Image 1 (cartoon, each protein chain N blue to C red):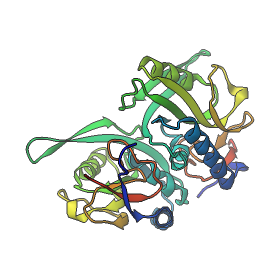
Image 2 (image 1 turned 60 degrees about the horizontal axis):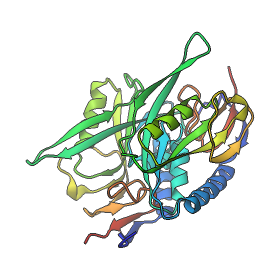
Image 3 (image 1 turned 180 degrees about the vertical axis):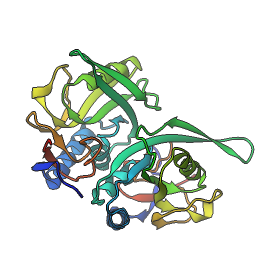
Length: 175
Length: 175
């Protein structure tokens, strides 16, 4: 594999797996007696979600949605909903799962959308949090790791579509 | 929770992971110097894709699609494409990844769909194969485990949306 963009490793595979186990336990405890619907955001959340659900011991459903954000010529960026969930979340407890919380734009829009769909509760679970990048306030209920505001790749995070399959998270070396 | 529907474990978590390692190594070898596009079928393929890609050591692109099959009142069933891939596969090497190959209806249609989109090559990788359920011929290039024509749950496979999060594959206990 051409590893041209793979820089310093921020989180090893072992660190990631250990932390996800803890998050799974926390969710199992918080949702005891409930049946949450986990909604993953394509494509980046897939490795995280797949690992997370192994450690959730309450019955759950999972679904996915795809949202793209386009940055315009001005400061504002627009969102396009490419694929919506097919599960009915009316009166359900939804947990939104994503790889990283950066600007918070996508996540804040999806929280709003889930509420409009009539979800009873909406919580957010992100593997990574970049507080320094936040532009839209979002409540993060479950966070794997807080990281500095650097461009990263691996474990779902990509550089032009590549490197999602790396089992660790590393700093992306720009060209 | 009602009656426990989780029956005999057919494939353990350890067996799944070690087989994914083997399949990943084989794909790595077969696609050396290439950048295959891995297309997972939502929702069942997610745990398998996530485990598989960890063990593919080349550069890959990851995408997902969603297809539902409806059983009509006659013998034939129809497919509805709910969400298509967003990656351009023209001239690319595609690997379609699914949890189980049963009737082969969905997989054979998606192979055809990828050829129509101009893919250079299309291969199919399934965690499970149920040869006795096959109605539509489909060429399976990579298979994790061959099983009997039983109703199975876990590691992505569901019953009414549940049990996908089990880290192993078990028989579903019918009434």
